[in-house]
Length: 429
Image 1 (cartoon, rainbow, N blue to C red):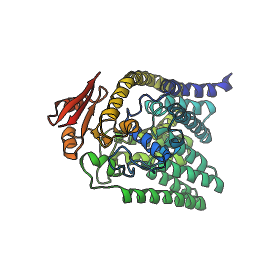
Image 2 (image 1 turned 90 degrees about the vertical axis):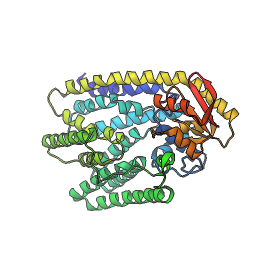
Image 3 (image 1 turned 60 degrees about the vertical axis):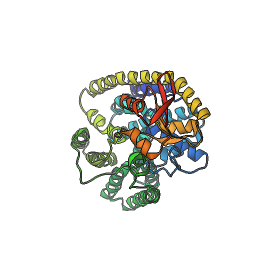
Image 4 (image 1 turned 135 degrees about the vertical axis):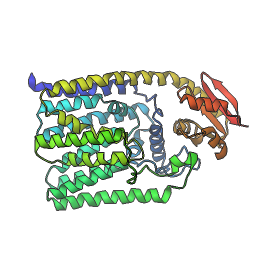
């Protein structure tokens, strides 16, 4: 009976994501995270053969904000949201399985390795990514595929690890420092040929993506255009932000030190985690994707402690209320869906094809109506920027921030042409 415990724990670890993914099987919350609808639009653009573009933006420029890993994976399934949601959820068991096998590879027992997966599977970021068009779980899967495979001392394994590392970088280009650390780890292990192969393929991917960004991005873009055309967020080595990211870095360092003390062996993932965590205080954004990728290290360190089952079990239970909240929020989006669809139908029937909007879910607006526009992105005076940019319409919904709704309602340069169940559309006078 005891031998079945690890497999039972892995099934328990999958339960929160199964619950959420089944509730979101038609992706009614698409666009709730802002970036997810842009990944969806990029996948549509690839599926339609138009290339990798930010199709919601006027002029439909090349998309330089995100690398093309997730949209490329989703492109064949983008026309069927139910199939797409299943594809996104399948990344959950894949990533948990790789974390489990990595734990076994590092010397943990079957039960201890399975316990790592229980709070990881209940972590809010993990659950949200299991049914949202977000790259987090794909990156987690590819990173652990990389670190697991490169531990195998063979040229074939090194090639597979390098390909997984390239795919991880093309899923989230913020991972390059940690992936470089994996190459350094191979050098430290005196596996020079494998390190050269890993470095060569990763360098080719970095040069290819950065060249694409340099050719198509516009670093001088300001206002509403900046987020779309300014290129991906970068590291600012001259600025150190003392905030929660610094605390996460400290936590990873402590976990790595404890892990090395207990296991007495350096691993590729520890190198990846320490170097990646060191970049957090210098990042332009919160880098939430990295927080999920770093979480297995402190969980593995806890798994080496006595009574780790109690600690990790309580951590998983502590995450469950957030899963329930996410499901409730999902139902709120589902109830709003008919109202939004009615507004989009009005836009399709009553506005010219060339109309440009200011809307918080601009990518989904374009996916449904083919109208272009911009997201206010919490910029000061977004409606004034919309007027200066020459946008034709302002769109506000009950799901938008109250400050944005108030700004749209109070703007003197736009007149109301549609208002129903909290959805407000105003036209340029």
